[in-house]
Image 1 (tube, rainbow, N blue to C red):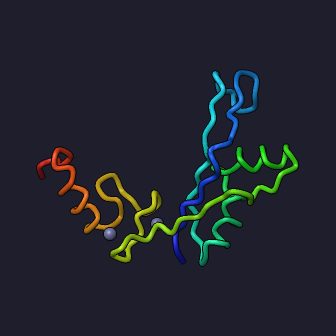
Image 2: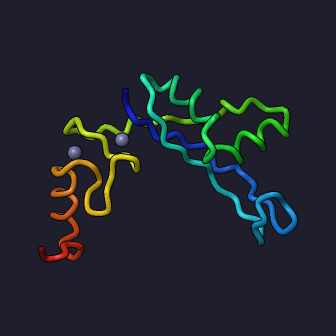
Length: 114
Ligand SMILES: [Zn+2]
Ligand SMILES: [Zn+2]
């Protein structure tokens, strides 16, 4: 199984005061969900059931649109074969020590000295 990052297009409306999400002023953006799936296609199917994708699905269904339309799934496995998704990451590591080392080489100011 692989972790996929599934993102909606940048078209979600975050309703303002009185709306069910209570945000004010209204904002626009995409929904993002991380799911574990055997394929990209399965990842997108799982993502529309994910709570983090709920706003997107709600909006699409409200517009009579297909909630699968426009969703994109990205395999979060890094070039070293490890997963760098938000579920596998810790406070100190993206999930792969080699990616961490590469990132620190580019961002030496982020090294915490120990
Ligand atoms: Zn992962
Ligand atoms: Zn890596």
